[in-house]
Length: 86
Image (cartoon, rainbow, N blue to C red; front, side, top):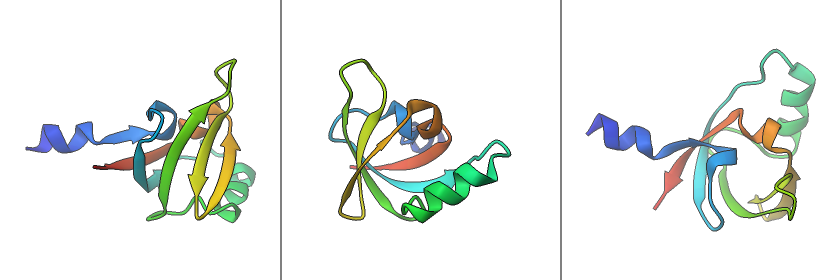
């Protein structure tokens, strides 16, 4: 059961188009300015997020969060963990 639960937790950059998740954690790698910026945009624990699409060259990615479309670099998105919503 625990193994199945872990499969439903992914980094934000690993989601596929149309997948939804709830933000469960954020690792800022010591970059408090980036963390503050993302928190200000609504990337807070418990927020529901939808992966919309990837730019033609693979970066950035387009997300839907709190009614807004947001583009985020994959490098930043890999630090955000989400629990998938079925």
